[in-house]
Image (cartoon, rainbow over all chains, first blue to last red; front, side, top):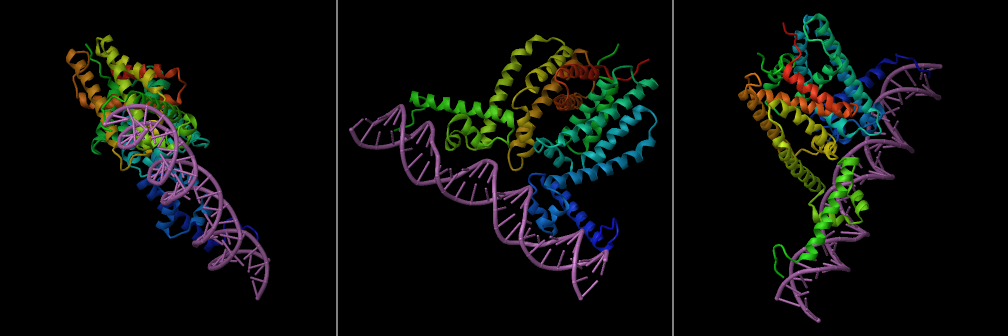
Length: 205
Length: 205
DNA sequence: TATAATACTGAATGAACGTTCAGTATAAAT
DNA sequence: ATTTATACTGAACGTTCATTCAGTATTATA
């Protein structure tokens, strides 16, 4: 038998369904229990599949988790691109950004599991590079946005790179804080933070 | 034999020395390898003591780590109180605060291990409460500082509570970022962040 | 010196868990 | 109908690791 690329329909279809079913159960479990606390056995119990089958579809527990993160990122990018056109001024974009962060990211089921995964499971892995990649993208986005604001005359001229870092830090920290605050306040705090970022707190005379 | 409170000198002294030796080795190992990656066996190997002895002096691995965190906190408080008198204006205090954060906390050996510990080992524990306690203290400190600034007329009147959260978030996020940035820039970025917190970024006319 | 409390030892326990692999079932190709 | 690639099973493996405990050593008390 030769490899036929895409056909052999029925089997491949079932296989993909199975993979999706495994991924879905895993996502749910990782979201509930976290990465480490979710065992392969848990996924077996939730799906009725077998251990071996999980390792057939994914290379390892980490591979499975990475697969879920990739799925998330794709979905995230789509949503981002969709909302891009709605804002004109940089100030609007900043407020739009934090809204998106609170609504989409903060409540995402994998959010906590990812934090845990990154803070424990990275040693010899390339995960650190992945994080750095995400962060670079964020910083690049922030920098371009702030530069746009400076060019348009909305913002003061300044070091866009440094400000991008400060903005990213504020948003990261805020996301962390928001986990421990009453849910309803998260968006308010994020908006307020943008306000401070724009206006400052110093008294003017 | 009855309990004699504090006497029975020689034995108690040796015991406390042993405990300190165990704690010191553990601190070093946790700092190097992290919480999970440091095994009791590692501490045994580093001290020449026995497993049982560690459990004699500390209740558990977690108990040992908590002991180290408590030590850290005491030392931290002392240093804080010592530096308090040097600043007069709130602006100075804010810059003094970030300096202290970068110099003392950011490079503290247990800093990473604590992050890891908090993000994984908290489930049925009271650790979450401990964190909340630390954070409450930070927020209270920030709030009082900002309120002082408002009262003195240095800062705009506003919601000190919200601003305290935003300041804390910024500093938390910045600490996180600083781990991935060239070391030398950490302090610069922190100072710049305070500048933005005070001045904002918006163009004025 | 006898006794009792404290300090310490380290082999044994036991549970958790990711991963492997020899083998079976199913569907596709010849 | 036969062969072959793909999909799946689950018992077994191997390792790691925190924790326990029965026993020994050391020092303080009576």
